[in-house]
Structure formats: C-alpha cells, structure tokens
Image 1 (cartoon, rainbow, N blue to C red):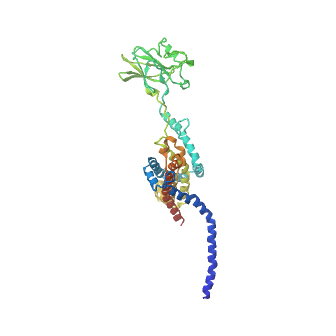
Image 2: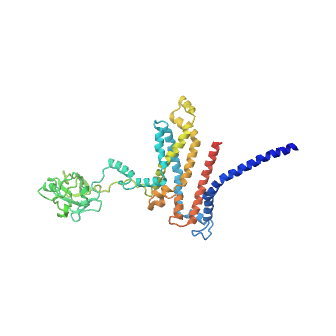
Length: 455
C-alpha cells in the first residue's frame, strides 16, 4: 500500500509537468491557429455559405449557383482551359526540369547555369506578365518574338515591293486595292505604256530609284517607254505619279517623279502570261519576242501584298499556349533545382556499375536515373498541379480584353464573376468552392507523400 501511494505521488509531478508543457505549447500555437482560422477556415466557411445565396445575398438558392456553373458556356470554357493547364504545364515543366538537371551535371559552369535559370523565380507574375505581354505584341517593331519571326521569314521569302501602292485613278489601269492591276486598253507589239501609281511615301521609295523622266525621254518623250520596244516588244515605265510640291500632270511623267524599281510586270494574252519583266532603277521595263496580237499589261498582286506581320500570339487560337509559355519561363528553374537535388542524392555506385556492365547513357537514364527519381518527380509534378490550378496573374495580365474569355481559367473566371463586372458573388463563391475541391486532393496527396518520405 505504501508503495502504491509513493508511485502515485511520483506520477503526479510528471502529470503536472506534462500538463504544463501542453498549456505552454497551446500558448505558442494559439496565435498561429487564430491566424489560420481568420485567413483560411473562416473564408472557406463563409464562401461556402455565400455560394448558397443569389447575387444580392438575400435569397437562398441552394445548389442553384453550382448548377449555373454547368450551364454557363464561359465557365465551361474556363474549366476546359484549366484542364489544359493541369495536363500540359506540369508535364512540360517536369520534363524540362529533368532534362536540364541531367544536363547541368555535365557542364563546367553548372552553378551559374542553374542561377540563370532560377532567376525568373525572383520575378513576380505581375512583372513577368507585363514582360511577355510586350514580347507577344503583334507589331514586329514592338514585339520581340514577332521581330524574330518576321526576320527569319523575310530571310527566306521576299517581301512585296510596294504594299501601299495603288493605281492612279482614271489613268488606264483597272483593279482593286492590293492588285492585281491591268491596263484597260490592250497593246500591240511595238507599243508603249505608262503605269502611274500613288500611295507610296517618298521615304518608302528604294534608295536606288532614279527619275522616271530619263526612261520617258529614251523614246523621244513618248509616254511610258523605257527603251525602244522594237517590232516584237512592248516597252513602258512604272513610276510614282507624285511630284514634290504637288505640281505636274496626273498620268504623265513629270520632272522629279521617280520610277518604281523592282515592280514585276506581265504581258498577258488570252489569260496566259506571255512575258515577264522587272522594272529597272528608272522604272523602265521591256518585253521582247512577243508574237503579233493584243496584250494586256498586268502588275501581279504580289507587288502589293501586305508585309508579313508575324504570328498572332495573343489571338484566340494561341493565347492559352502563349501564357503557358510565360509560366514555363518562370517555373522551369524551380523544377530543375528540386530535381537536381534529388539527382545529387542518387548513389553513384549504381550508375558506375551500369556503365561497367556496358549500359549506354540512354539506358542508364531510362532504367536507373528516372526510376530512382520517381519520388522527387512525383512531388514536383503534384506541386505544379496545385500551382497551375490557382494561376491568375499571368492570364489576367497577358490576355488582351477581346480574347480574355478564350484564355480564362477558373481563378480568373471567379474574379471576373465576383468583382470584374459580373457582381455575382454567389456564383463567384461557388466557383471558389469548386476550385478548392479540385486542389484539396492534390494537396492531401502531397502531404502524405512528404510524411512517408520523412518516416
């Protein structure tokens, strides 16, 4: 009996010490719990309750807002875009991160390389969105991507000589804006033509253009001949019918008016091109070897085609891939660093043993490196899935107003419905609850994965 009393007396101080530790722990944890309740639990509960009421918040509608999500085309489009994000972005980022992590092990300046790739993580989504909004500009003079695309295109494909030129009205040429233009009257071999154009800014005339008056004088002032046509030829001049100061006679080559070099001209008979010529520096051209008959002189539309302006990155078809590209730029360094840390922890003995057995680097990568990195790859993939479900800034900033609906994801749709003009916080709250329900499974999976790895 005395031993029992002694044991109880000894246990009481231990219990009091444990209770004291628990109270002390609660005191330290309580501020965090209060903050968590105020910033997480209360908003979730309030949003769920608000989702059961109409836009005004006065009438209870139950699951009406959730039913509206299914029947709203704009919301379904946002759900489709979110699915594209979840499927494409994490897969690309995980693959890029794995590839770069493996490659950086084989370069001398691996640390500097990783630093450069990780630097975009220090840039906010707001700043990244502004940068890529400018980079994706349609105008090649402003958008760096289209400047590069147009430069490559123009290196392999000649641009139109005079995209803004148009025929002088009432001077014997027919055709609409952008060409082709043809002479109203036919011409027989031995004849000459004068092709007057306007709409070309003086600064857009090639530097090697010479006055068209010299070509006109070559045949004694006859209109439009660049050289004597001969009995089997047709000669002419194509010129800018604009004299400095507005002087001169329309349709006639006046002093100071320049030829339009490089203009392609065709002699057409019975719908077929019989001969082709290119205007020289003074605008003169000549067809030779023509058979007897009536010919129309035509300037193909290729002379007046609008210049290539690049890719419409922010159009309805490409806006979502373009925004995903900006997201990849920001987050590739994150994936690379995490996968690189896992790669550094792989036992080198297994890799060396495989090399000793004659395995190629590709076989080592597929059958040893990737399987050993599977836990790290899974964590990176699931983390990115959670992140892309919540993406908002890039979509809202990069997508222009006319195509905003085509680029919307659930987060942007939720904001637009609630605060961006929709003023329906009931539907917006329902969207937030749906977004939470989609994110929770991935979060739970990640937490369990961390616990198992730490066990």
